[in-house]
Image 1 (tube, one colour):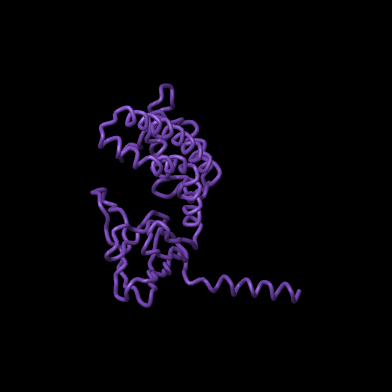
Image 2 (cartoon, one colour; image 1 turned 90 degrees about the vertical axis):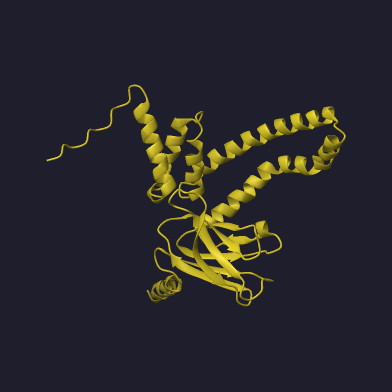
Length: 255
């Protein structure tokens, strides 16, 4: 009994050490090599639908570190924009402690961790890089050859390279699509899954029954996100337009 009490006490200490409460976030960042006083801006898509980005918060780098805190209702993509560096750092803002290590010399190599959706985002990107490596290698190995062919107007070489590239692009595209579906089927809590199905439903040739089956397997919390609700609206609209589908219930008459 004494051992159990000690174990429970230790667990309580671990849970109480969390720096954030429900619906809160803290971004703890390192920015080595970036001068003191340089600004880092937290941005997201304009919710008004007018396009562009809006600033959420601005902090300054101090001794190679920065911290941003706030509240958030659901996971969503945001970016960090560094002063004097054009390329942003994309990540998923959600409740919890998010760690971001900025690589100023190679932004795409910046490291993001600490919360479920960000860890999933990193793993998903790594897996997709493997799928798309063949295409990337082809571009890298043939860029010079294509440039030379264009300069000399060597249409035979240009057409050959384009045909090979298009064939490879189709092959990689099919593998990517398979990977997207497989991921969404096996990750019912991930924001990435909802974004995949939302994108899938934008394709007129999409397998609607497959999309609906995957959506139905999602956790309720994921269904209640903006992309989750958008998927439901799309499926409802599609199903109501299918011949033979039951009509939507009439609205109650006003008193």
